[in-house]
Image (cartoon, rainbow, N blue to C red; front, side, top):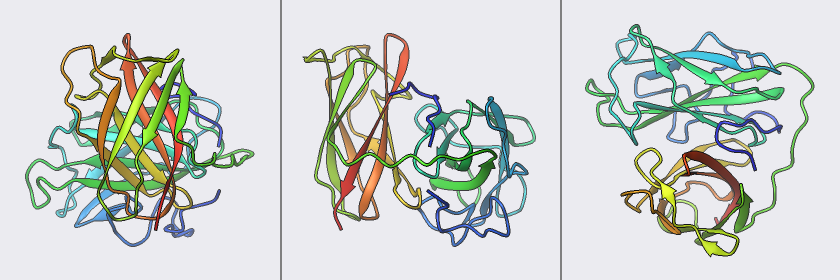
Length: 267
């Protein structure tokens, strides 16, 4: 599996999109599949990005007054988290873009494979009518070229990345809170050299197969020092049944690794 920020080659749109308006999505909700919620909107003039080379995606968050938001609360060491995911749930990228004084953000993306991509921004406004509320908004972009769809791997409890075996344990039911445990081993031995990453020992996000709905699974294992692991705990509440693609990011020896596996959630 590739490391963080790597782009993996990657079925159709989310079902929430208006095809007559590129990048504009349907009804607001908390699954991230809309560009607007409670007066806040994710705006961008980028409806397409080039394939075969790195690209910059520029966007802004506007508030209920229509003006760009420039004050954001810090969440897991960052003011805004940005994710790019292809419609078949490959090509995952998790970035921390930079913001200009006028509120324009720039996300420097690695090479994107041709196809339909969804760009997510997660943030909490600092003050204003939406202050202290967590938002997940997204827009779609098209990357031109011949698109090859990758079949979602079957649900499995383990995967390997960069020599580390990741084992996920937890039986999840849609809409209910469950604990989720991740264990890391290397050559059969427990991994105990995890370094803090974004204020914790691991970052875990999930995308729903079929529509790419977004969920962030919150860590409950505190981070202190460079001797984390091998067991990590997460608070998991996935809203819809079916398969979800999980992306676990963790750091060892100064390098961030990204492990991906498919988890089935009961109805």
